[in-house]
Amino acid sequence: MQTDSGYQLVRLNNGICSVRSLADGETFHPVVGPVAEAEALYVNQLKLRERLKNHTGEFVIWDVGLGAAANALTVLRATRDLACQIRLVSFDHTIEPLKFALQHATDLGYFGGYEKHLQKFISEQRAEFQDGGQSVKWEFHHGDFPAWLSSKSGGRAQAPPHVILFDAYSPARNPAMWTLPLFANLFQQLDPQRPCALPTYSRSTILRTTLLLAGFFVGVGHATGEKEETTIAANDLSLIAEPLAARWLARARRSHSAEPMVEPVYRTAPLSEASWAKLQAHPQFCV
Image (cartoon, rainbow, N blue to C red; front, top):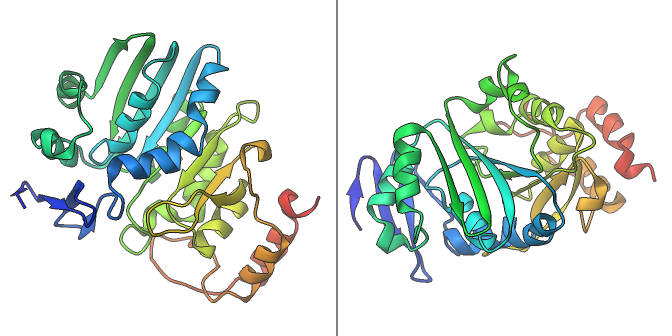
């Protein structure tokens, strides 16, 4: 299908269109498509409508991996009929996928009603608008997310999130976004008094170990596409319906790919003795 600016419009097996980055060799939401994946992983799993109905004041969402904005727009559309205040903070090293996607909005099908807001968002890196009872403040942080997160003027300058939509490229393609230091820094940005959940598409042992050692509680996430399960992490165990249990811990001990990456270089290794001891002492497994 049509190619432009290093991106290509592709049609998935179910007939839904998505965007492919030619330089990275990655197709966004490659199995069920952008909207279905975002609804399963984020809207439904996070019980966003329920949380927003019961929330007073500004609800902060960090959108890590803006891409072509399918996750962010699906969240906004699913909650647009609610009286709520949403601060949406998107992060990515490029806004080009969104520019390309907006040019093909009709084929992609998830932009309806947001085109003018996104034109402003692209040109000014922020947009504010009212959609019925929903008030939205949306900003874009362009650059290296791990560096921003670890800087003194980075994450601490943002209001702590209630929800994190984590949708970076795969660890093999983008290892810097999946290291233990990154998730430890991310955990440090959270407010212990503000429950926050982070779902993501991977179910790998190395990811789950990394999240646990970074300080999160971790559980089995909702299925999406061909994946029978994904992963959800949180700073509050009550946000996780199916926490990882001792049986998972035993599997992690036997795994050949469980030791977290400390450097942004993809590699696999079994758990070190130090990591194993820390896992066993995690509050999730000491109940």
